[in-house]
Length: 145
Picture 1: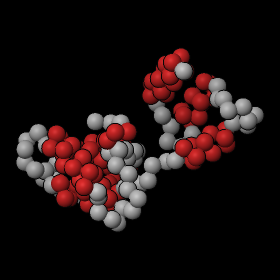
Picture 2: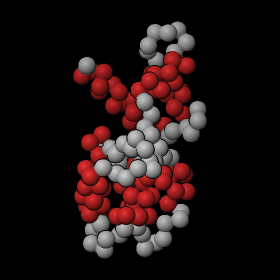
Picture 3: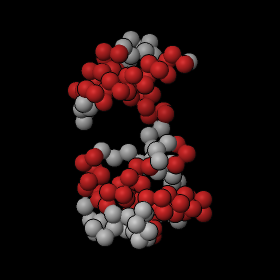
Picture 4: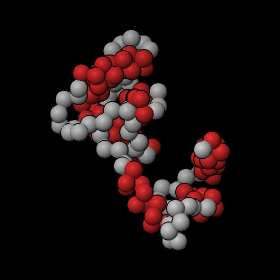
C-alpha cells in the first residue's frame, strides 16, 4: 500500500478532502477492513495513515494512536484522525538544504561511510540492517542511472 500513488496531500488540513481523496480513503479503508465491520483497529489506522504518505516515527505513531478506542475508527473517524495528525511532506528543497549541511566540500556527493555514520548516529539512529538496506537500494538506483 505504500508509494506516491497513495499519497494524500492536503493544502489545508482544515478543509474537506477532495472527492478523489475521499474515494481513495474509502477504497483503501475497505481493503484493510477484512472483518467488514466498517471500522479499523488502531494498528490498521496506523498502516493506512502511513500508506497515505505520512511518516511519523514508531513512537510518534504510537502516541497518535493512543486515544483511538480498541473498537477502532469508522471512515469518518479515520478522516478526522488523518487531518488532525497530517504533516506536510518534506520538500525536495528542504532535503537539499539538509544535505548541503553535511556536504562540506560542496561536491554534491556523500561517501557511503559518511552517510552510514550519519544514519546510525544522528537524531533517531537507525539500526545497521536498516542502513544497509537503504544503501543497497541506493547502489541499485546508481547502477540504473
